[in-house]
Image (tube, one colour):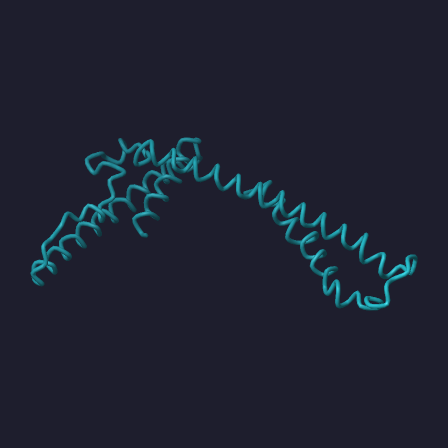
Length: 173
């Protein structure tokens, strides 16, 4: 999990640097520092793990899962060019972003339809029961609170809060 966070930090920093962020030099410096500390930590943990496994008599396997090989350790600070682990990682991020956008668009479309349907129920069926214009069957007369429950509150929440938040998210994800 920490490894993924460090990778994400480096990828985010890379995007800032590529976009010409005003603090690109400082970002490079701090990402290099984080990467170096993470590498040192990973190496120490690998050694401790090896020692522990050896003491317990467990066969040791490669501990490559502890290593973070995004920025080559041999590069100096000046030469560090932040980059993604590989092209596939970038492609995976793009696919994930597209999938998320699709899901959010579908959620927004579904929520709009739901709000529209709730409004239709309120304006058509509930209004018919409460307006006194039409004659209501005796079995359901004065039972709109049982039939419709808190539909007005549900509509108000979805129309005024949830839908608005989804629309805001669509504008500024």
